[in-house]
Image (cartoon, rainbow, N blue to C red):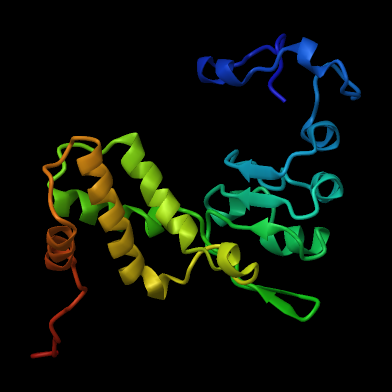
Length: 226
């Protein structure tokens, strides 16, 4: 835990530094709280790894988190896979299949107690096609924070896990076309609301989206000589 009094902190970490007065109820050994101490004392619901430190999320850390949260959200997002904070298979086993897991690198599905868990790759591949399509279709002058937020909200609405309580956290990539168009429409509408695009009717937006949507259609090639 970044705490006042630590040496060697960088400028960008300053906003995350915790005051010791706020930790008076915490019990931990040493001068500063470790990641394991944070699990015991803060009982977080979400753990996101972007450290590039392989194995940082140990069995002890994950089990301590699970003890304080029945269904923890654990995202070891570091790339490449050799740098991941914890292997998704281990996270699922350590939480008795209860954790919601996504990674930054591609991992195969995990089987635990007869149930198969799809491990979604949590990156911008689901969103940036729709953002670009929406911006181009609306002829937006810039991309605002609100436009990025609404694209994330559209992706969240498409989550099988959120809608049914089961399945993958993120939709299958084979569903990317309708999802991208849905995101594009929401981004275009938000661009108009934010005043960075001219007003268009919903029908005009949808037509522009269909016109600008790119399909990966390639010519067939054949060998002419050895």
